[in-house]
Image (tube, rainbow, N blue to C red):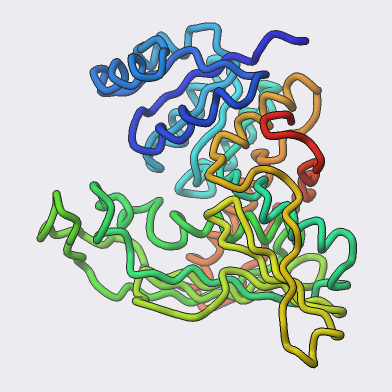
Length: 367
């Protein structure tokens, strides 16, 4: 058996906890160090997780193979660049970057260095989306012809301890939540060919209602509602809407419509099901049938994408959460912005291949 792939973390904020919790399940990786601009926070996390606390510079100079970039979105490009320049593979929280130019530069640098840059979300590798992907790949709904995706909420200011960045560039419902939905659609249907969208900003200021920031004014510098139409290269047409202006709704997260049936896809911000199948023979009782989930990754399994990257390095293959997919999703999100301001449809230049589907029949932690 090969030696475990060594991993370091830059960014010891709230999201780091779930990565630290799940890493020990995967025996082909080993977390060794963490770093943060707040060295005391890094030391606290390191002590709790049994890691070595380092400065960012020292971590990049260490012998880790992969660096997990958990910094806020505005720093993703710069930290990813430094990781790659240091000769390490990078795995980044979403989005890959907050503008297309930086995303393109990141992927180009990784290829120049013969390194991988990967990006969340890895929920697409979980049991729910893998089951939906298998249903489509095996023709259970026939050729996909359309679909819908809805991420509608009233924003994070009522629950998040520090929600201000959600309303700055790199945040908002599109850049914060869009990657879950758009990455799922690309895994299921392949690349997007064209985008037409409109957008709206409801308020210039939001008021935090979370306990620790109650009453704090949050400047809103991004649009807070987006309605888009996606034309996929394979032919399917999908409505995909994202909003922080909605109190309640009854839309399914994602549905895919095929020539021979329909597929209900679970919330792409989770790893579980249910995955619903509706075929012509179900018309009489109008009942959707839940499909059995195909992998054990049902609970919050964040770190799965990092584990897949490590396995890809050992096996000499392309990781599933690869930079080409992340860049394509970033280009689609940027196209929403361009289309909404220009009033025209935007063609998507990048056309990546769909990643390989997650294998079934393997126990938890075995890639």
